[in-house]
Image (cartoon, rainbow, N blue to C red):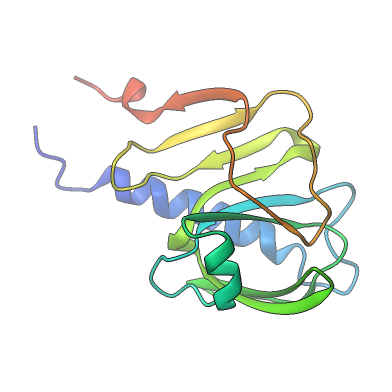
Length: 158
């Protein structure tokens, strides 16, 4: 059966919209509300990603950033976001298209999304338990968080 509507693409776009709206919550001068903070993993070599060359060398495939207390100039646009984070004490401007994001987690409320890559299906994750938190505004190599993966194929009619 052919999906002429493109439900996979629609689902991915809707999930990226959730990330965009969550980031918008951090655009005010007070930062993110309550205890919310985000782990965002993205492909460093994806089209449109603009980060310092030394960060690409350090994280050639994926990079995870933490948006919590120490970030500056967060700008949320329709297709990407921009932010300044410090790496080893040096402020760096990052320009990240939503299409480059592979994982979004807000551990304060046990919420997470995983986005499809060219070689796997779209899925949604819910992290189980607390995660070891890198310093806010820092980067950590992307690692698989423990959690329950719900593959959207399970909900399709056959």
